[in-house]
Image (cartoon, rainbow, N blue to C red; front, side):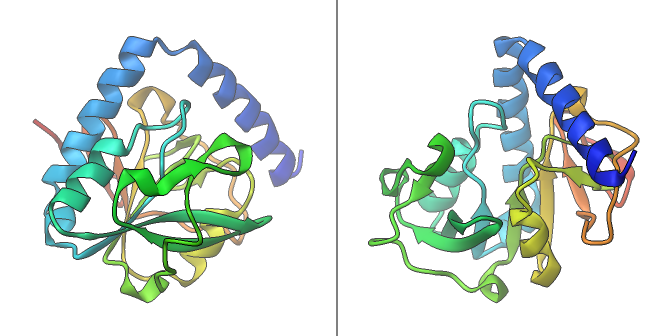
Length: 196
């Protein structure tokens, strides 16, 4: 099996597993993950953050976006502009978001300006699953792989503990993320740090 075939098979497995998680667990784990992220010194020190807008199958990042906006941080979110290509667009309110491609909430390109990748202090990324070392499996579009290929700031990956996997098929274009945050642990370069 090629790496791409292994990834496709794992995506199918993880989507099935995610669909079987209870709504209570998903809600509670999202709340804890967001609270832990807001307590990270790297988040608190950041002036500009880039954060995905969670779908029903991902971590609900609205508390992060709301807190960052209320704290006076510059907040940007992804706007998909072509297959595998996304722009970072600044929002001033959650009202700037509307359903876009695939029903994902996206910023209004007529109102939300482009933010250069180099201006981001902390990037908060999604995954279908990942391991403790920050190797991620995404949806397969390549959006975040392209972002990571030229982004040099701090990056944290949000993943529910029940969706962590040891083995993630890797290709040359896959970039590890230094921090993995779950509802119970922050892993830095694979080393766990217990959270309260």
